[in-house]
Picture 1 (cartoon, rainbow, N blue to C red):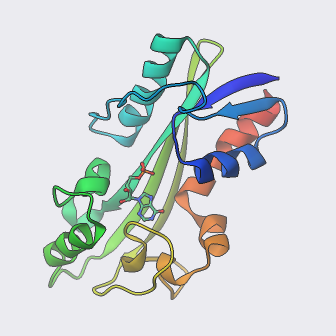
Picture 2: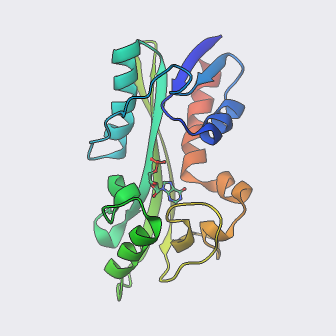
Picture 3: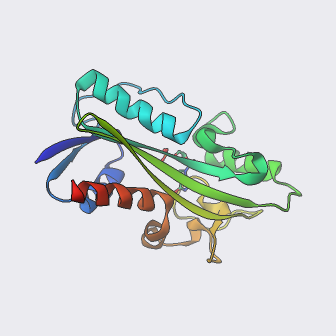
Length: 191
Ligand code: IMP
């Protein structure tokens, strides 16, 4: 069995990934290894941010690990909010972040966007990246109450409901995060 640290304290994310990787891997959270540090996230891309997490854990603890970074890229806003998705308005208040996005898109016809996740994996002294993306459009109102973040304003292509109008199960079956995690799990299965 090989221990892999997932650079997260989100128990739900950890469980979800553990269920997808084979039993040869035991996943640990940051809390499990006693890491309470505020790991820097100062990159200009999702990949840089994800790699910052694994570099930090590899350097400080010498452990094999993976970390993810996600966000929303809107074409008409040159890819914003991107790496600033969590604090686009300057605060973590998602109502304010969504309000800012909708005000910037007022009167804009080009509404294409995508959610993206990049996973950085550090294993056997090697660095690997896995990407998941889902294309869609940003609507001009909030619809639905499930999910989190920008879910109420994002409709994935081929659907007529926002992520926030879908069950968790349905969102998870098509989401950027599940695509990236699926690639990570496939890689670890073959390892
Ligand atoms: P994280 O890297 O997974 O923590 O995501 C960073 C930010 O991107 C979150 O705080 C959300 O604002 C946004 N985001 C990432 N994934 C999703 C999603 O599945 N739905 C809605 N917003 C998301």
